[in-house]
Length: 448
Image (cartoon, rainbow, N blue to C red):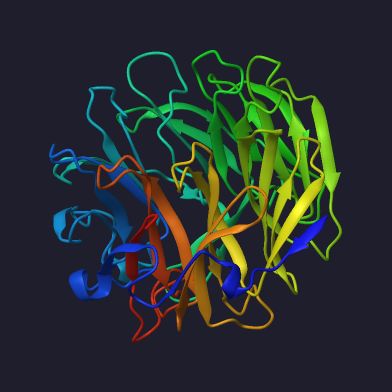
């Protein structure tokens, strides 16, 4: 494997600070809105019909969603705070946007760890419905998907009556579920089906993934079991399990992708614990698998499949190692190159950044002490060719978090912009709250 470390002089577009480089817009969300949360999720939607997408996010200023204009950061709407207030230890954990009731207009969905499901009108931010289910909800990878036949789409949740609380601060998140169940809701927030206690004694119920793996028009659902990834059909029937015996006992990421171009349909790509990757067919047959030595993969957390002229490839982000690394794996999962970094590389996404007709790799970095043993107090945004060579890098001192949160043609020039969140977390209110005196920034990045 080729090990790569960029030098500043080798980077065609290099910038630092609050302007210049690839920055097209900068919004200080704390100054504009009093924001107290590090922004991890965003969706681009044209909610006012002007042909330019707005940015929909969630906010810790109460338990709300917010829609802002992409030209100046001003508010289009802010939803009501319908979940119980923060002093009751409630924290909204996830947001999704999609046409839940299939009427041609998107809804905005919020979920809290404590069991709130909130449905909002994406045009006005007004409340459509609110359900408080008698379960705790784990990091649900909330998504609007067609799972069951009939009118409307669905959301799938991993739920439990007991879970491990994780801080810091009074607004707890739930990181592991005991005796987890799978709950699927319909477009009105009512139960479509419930698979109770699908993994007895499990404490690894972590995420919920939904993909149409067999091409029948309905999504299947993947949940974490006991050292396995359990797949369910659109009626709650258990289909098969994929082995995940790796160190953590659960995968941190699952993707669905046409890994075999000569075979119709998609394959399942998932992390086996923290040091391995597996590729499986839509019927549960393991096609490829690899485990990597700790010096290059001590904690794989995110994967991103992509097509290249040489065939399918996989980008894998490794964190919590002495030298964090972005791995580029070929169609047999063999490492081709690794990009070394002084901070954890996170949230890989892809787009044709420079308009050459080929997708590039786009990432942010996180330099928090818990992951990076050197305790980096800076972060950066990077655009990388599929051979590991640099296109662009922008660096911020004094902030530990930089994550791409949305990609799209925001200004209508035919080329993508990347919405990038820059700030800090682990503040007094909860894991994603800002530390005292810190600020949350949003940047729109694009090729100069």
